[in-house]
Structure formats: structure tokens, C-alpha cells
Length: 289
View 1 (spheres, rainbow, N blue to C red):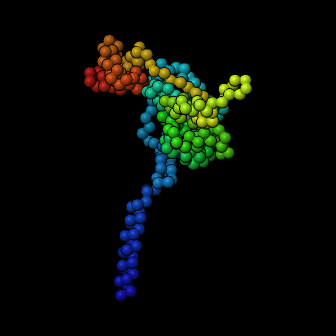
View 2: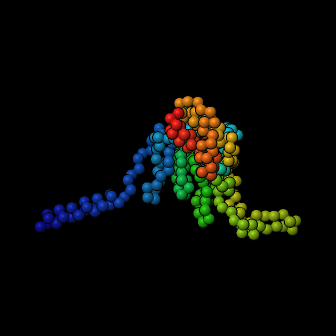
View 3: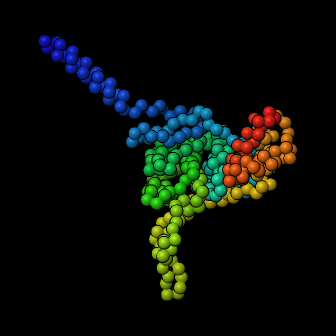
């Protein structure tokens, strides 16, 4: 009788353990430090570095008509990988004009000089210091990349980023920089009613309210600000031609695709490098060029 009871207990325990095992998140793999790019991911409350094997590369030469922006980023990254002082970077402006592609091109150019990229989502910025602790003692140079960064009213993730950029007691050493892209220069929406908080002294000097100062102070903590602008029609067509000639097998003149390319951009409401690349892929595929 006792033996039967023990066997039943064992069987019940196995079922309970199996249920618990199925409920728990899988254990993350060990970090593959041979990879050149990583993504910060979450398993339940804990985060880990996921090694990216199929990283989408792009050459610096593939990005045209943003020469000033390229030179600034390239110079800063060169200083960084060579152990010299460098700045955190905020890139803002029009969609599809090459902001995130420019960051990826730095990895393509400098990965052999030990540069690595770690992408982190806005929603995970609260884990920023956990990421830093993992990377701090590594020999590689890391760019922590926050793409399409902006914060809505009530979100508090920006405070972790703000603390990281300036004022935290945790040292980031000399091997970590933040590169961020955003469609907003000040990252957080500003409202007209906040101007009502402005004050002025007896000399008439205006002092911004605390809310506006809080919102603009995050952007100001990036050492380098770079703006990107919408492309002109001619610039857009030049970029289309570049990608058609690179993707295809023949050299194509603009008059072969001009009207279609302009219509493509009009329907999408944008003349950007991203739209140009998308049209080029479509056109080459359709025309067998």
C-alpha cells in the first residue's frame, strides 16, 4: 500500500514539474561574442543579449546625398574605435533619409576594428544599466543603438536614458556610446499649454517652465546632434538610379524609370532613400533588368 502511495506521489510530482517547466521561459543561450551585432531581448522579467548572425549590412558608399552627416558620424566613430574621446549621437529628421542605415554602415566599416552594435528597444531602456554592466569589461567597442526613439506623454523610460547619458554614478568606461535616431528633435512631445509655464524676471528675460526644461534636457545630453532632411525630386531620382544600377545587371538612364519613380513616391507621400530603394527593387524585378 505504501509503495503504491509513493509511486502515485512520484507520478504527481512529475506532472507538476512538467507543467512548471512548460510555463517557465526558456533559458537564453550563452552570448556568442564572435558575433558583431546583438539585440537586447526579454524573457519574462530578465533580459539577455541575443547574438545576431544574419546582420543586415550596408556600405557607407551606398548612402548618397548625406555627405555632411556621413562625415560627422564617421569621424566620431573613428575616434571611438581608436580609443579617443567621442560623443553620444542623436540623429533626427525626416523618415527614410538614412539615419539607421548610417549606424549600420559604421559596423560594416569598423567591425574589423572591434566595433560591435547592440540594439535596444525603447520599451527596454529601463534595462540600460544591466546592458552596461555586461559590456563594461569587454575588450570590444560597443555602440548601443536606439532606433526611432521618442517618448509619449507619461512614459518614464526617458529618465533612464537621461541618467545614463549624464549624471549616473555608474561608469560606462571608454567602450560604450549611445547612437539614437528619432523623428523628433526633443524626443518628447511639447504642447502649447506648457509655454504658459514660462516666467520672466524684472528685466524681461524669459525663463522656460520646468516641464519644457525637463523635455529638452534629454536631447541636450547628446554630444552630437545631426539633422536629416527630405530629399528634392532630383536627389530622389539620383538615388533611385544608383540602386537600380546596383541591384540590376544593366546601366539604366533616368528617362527609363523617371515617371514611374515619381508616381511611386507620390503614392507613398515621401521622396526618401528608403522609398527610392523600394522602388528600385520593384522596377528591376518587373523589368528584368
